[in-house]
Image 1 (tube, one colour):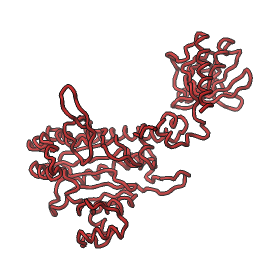
Image 2 (cartoon, rainbow, N blue to C red):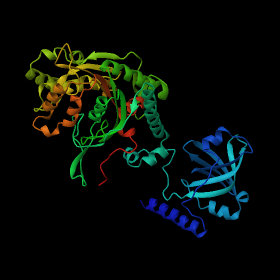
Image 3 (cartoon, helix red, strand yellow):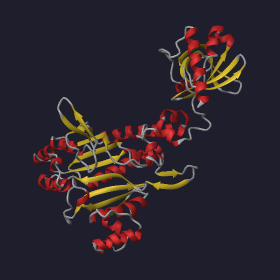
Image 4 (cartoon, one colour):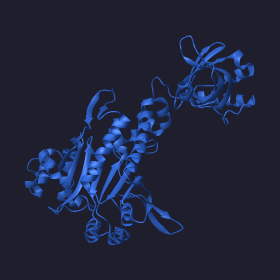
Length: 482
């Protein structure tokens, strides 16, 4: 700590020294001839260039200095000589530190070792860094610090920056993919009077002017379905959802979802769409359908094979594969079986919840290659359409990859009478939590439709090999330091 404070004070004194020389240490506009990547791409000896970047390396050879300047597009070497820039500018140059932002102007040349470089004629201080950067050779090893101070993680760990560049590309490509197929991107309210569309604990707030409580949305589903009623036939939203629940390597209280709805489609068409979309993303952005996941040492722990066609199997069949005879057991025998299998259950769980817990532990968490789990019990999905052959089931899929649910998809329930019954069963005594406006909309007629949700954070984890959701969210929520 003392060393850190001493470095901070030394740099602060240099800041004061710059101001004493009439130099503003926190900069101004600096016009460039291009990014560092642009300059390197078109590089030719004799070109006159103006570039700006962060000082990331400095080799002091007396009166001659070789610097590395870095921006988001790359790195270039700058050569500074006392005679070239003059004594006043050289004094200013000597007040620079690693991490400072500078602008330089000069002539392109190639060193004897073949390094494209810029011979600096003028130098401008753009921003003084009062704290040193992490050592680029050792990176930022403290995992908690990487999450709390993401800017240092991005500076010190190039692989971390690459993950977020891929996330950006994934979002951009999803938009392009859906728009090419006729889907319209829409926006729905993030503050809602009733937190609907999923079973989750919401965040609550209060609107002073209206004198009413509001909830941050847990899902946009019910508003997107209103748009189907209103005549939009293909819609999607890339949205932020908020759930006031646990934090883990797979859960963050604020997360990104894609939801899309397609009039006159069903869950099978939506599964086709998702399969095509995810494989397209893998090939275009990752460059392969074989997605490697590695441990901290870099060893491959699993390879996820996204090659089509993906498996589709019924919920019941998958549970029977994992626990033969499960559905021939009585509810009490199922509880006893869970104890034998070391599957922890709560005494408050009802029978279908116990079965779902077994599915999560013995099927979902052990499924790494893509599998569409179809025809789930109706109790699990109150917004989906009942199966015509078996009214105890609903026409849905849950796409499982990498041991977790990536995407649910439904044949959407559009019968307002059945929908009301399902919502009332889900609400129990809390009838005030039923979205009456949504039911009114449904009573005006909603076309049959297919719908999907895709967890963007989990999708990015799967495609990039990240093992924690915090590795794919720029600023994950964390408990404040004590």
